[in-house]
Image (cartoon, rainbow, N blue to C red):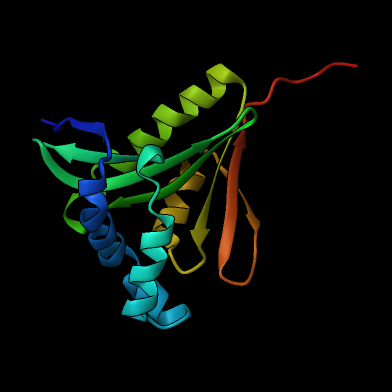
Length: 153
């Protein structure tokens, strides 16, 4: 039986969990690309943790991951979709993407994200969900799925 996860709004008390899950999920990639500097990473986190845009993914009332969503009139940008390794490959990430893809389709927006080039598992997930991949820079891909209303001339 597949367990159901929930999404709840983050609070400032979730800051340490957010940092820990990001470190658990991304440290190996960051080490390989730029090198891991704990002081820099903590400062970066403190300056970039957007509590009002972040949801905590919970399973049985236990936090297992995060997703940050930035939205404007044309775009839903998925950031910081981090799931602890024990809970990966259980369709949680794809289900979260589908929730926001449905929202983008309903609201006629583009849904987009960035993914590290070294993170091939995440790339595979997004490609399987129908995202288009383009190069952003030497370390990241930009991926998107366009649900903007088609304008006829």
